[in-house]
Amino acid sequence: MPANLPPQYFDAEKNFREAKDPMEKIAALEEMLAIMPKHKGTDHLRAELRTRIAKLNQLAAKKSGARRASMVIEKEGAAQVAVIGLPNSGKSQLISTITNASPPVAEYPFTTHSATPGMMEFENIKIQMLDTPPLVHQAIQFWLPPLLRQADVLLIMLDLSRNPLEQMEAIIAQLKKMRIVLGDGGVGDDPEFTIWHRKALIIGNKLDLDGASQNYAALKAEYEGRFPVIAVSAKQGTGLEELKAKIYEVLDIIRVYTKAPGSKADFSDPIVIDRGSTLADAAAEVHKDFAAGMKFARIWGSGKHDGVMAKRDHILEDGDIIELHL
Image (cartoon, rainbow, N blue to C red):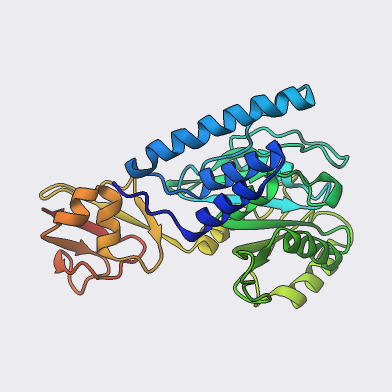
């Protein structure tokens, strides 16, 4: 089975070949591992990359006197969202509140030194959330840029008790150094280097503190229309349900349900695909045999009539039910 590797994989492979230091090589290999699609065609290559990472870890341990654990975090659930921000913005507080993770939470900065994953439940799906170290130059480790590039959405956490516009400028500057651009515009692709464009959701945190409302108004005036902007208090739990819905909206994904002929639909385990996906795309997510051998399908939801036969190129909508026939 062909691996069908995306162009970004070969960029990372080039970085690996050009890297001189074991740590840089590990970072490139982990980026390759994170970018690579997960299917049987990549199983052998995935195992080979993990073996290379293990050997380089041993080499790095001999040089530094300490073993460094791999920081690649493979995607789980419906999508992966990385929570980023400056020191003491409340990232860890948010993650500990809306997921099953338990990152260290304190009133002093720099309590997060590694990436901590947790699963956030939204209705009948789970979304992986990553708590990350603060985005300041002296705290950015070599493994962080690949981690942020692989995320589906960057959730930008701002402290509303301080000037949020200055915080945004600082964060955008640090992301630019990683060749990460928020949204679709702002920077053209450099022919020498890959530019990663990432969806973003801006969160003004600490809404319960003095001056937060005025700072949030300034934040909305500057960025609303370019990015979704929302205010919460992670400590008090204010706005967190709205935040979950907004994260789902920004991911721009849909849920599609399957049913066997003569049976009811299974609403507990939806297929999660990008908005704009077709019936053929959904069939491929069920099983590769359906993608290749599907004779016809019936659809409930976005069809003109319930149970109507649909073509392979039919664009699905959130909540559709499909019945596939081989």
